[in-house]
Length: 399
Ligand SMILES: *Cc1c(COP(=O)(O)O)cnc(C)c1O
Image (tube, rainbow, N blue to C red; front, top):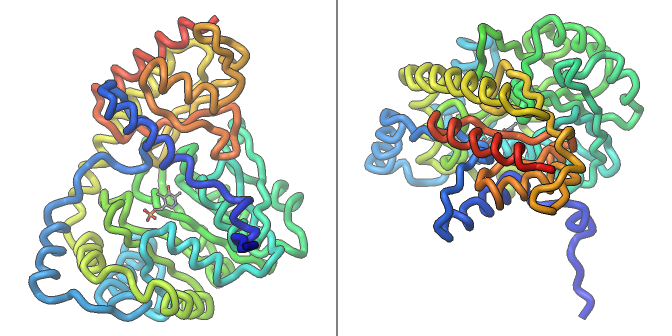
């Protein structure tokens, strides 16, 4: 037999963040007290009003197929959200609901990419962007950024990396993994430069609500009609409403793109779960008090973890203005050893931290930033304290 898998499979890796969580769970099952800074999700439960809406949807018989692009109710709720929070008006045929923002992105890349099309992905990047592009036979083009520049791309970067094959640029502000938030001014410069360029802008706004120290969110789609006409906003309820398991994401963008995405969805998913869609309606239309509560908790934890890192030699941790991650630079620890075992890179460090200090972090290499590691502070403050104490002790024992 000579049956072979698609060529693209060999070039793609499974999601690293999920792998770290799996390893941590394994150690925990063996009885170890593992503190998990690996998770990419809020540790809060889904708010009661949202759960109640889902139960009601089941009782009311909202248990059948919906329109492929999502229910009118949820698309209207998204339409209202974009108007209310972002001052952006979209028609219903410019909106689609998908099974999570990750699925929104995959469907979007399926819609716009031809083989060999280049997608500009600023690094450090969210783990899935390059692999999604590669799976669809596109070419991820990594645009490096620096900590000095707050991990933001500039017009000079774009000038350097745009080619006739460039099909899209991915922006993710606030950023996973760095927590960086683009200011309106910085986005405006990028928007002015891109106004006359033929490329799509994919704006992943899933951390929009997670802002600290008075930082303000700006969507590049708000900056001009020309930019809005080529921008696809990607968002969802996973992070803002602690609904990662419900799998509801959405896109807003040019009608032609959204309609093509709807066509693909009608031939693949059919529709996102009817019950989860009903829950998402309540998330977007209902009281927003849970978001504010969660945010206050995250602000406190961010301050706590940044402060704790100040006391660890050889680890440089900026205090980011968004999302719920810190992204400390750890390369000063490389080439040292823990109990005779040499740490050469972010993967070695993450493995050593998990095995010896029982704290789970994600190696920066998976985000295209080898000198860093990512810690999520979406966990209890006491775990932040205990975990960082272990981190400190681990570093003190490096030779
Ligand atoms: C979590 C995350 C997503 C995907 O969220 P879903 O759970 O699929 O809605 C997309 N982009 C970034 C940057 C994320 O961190």
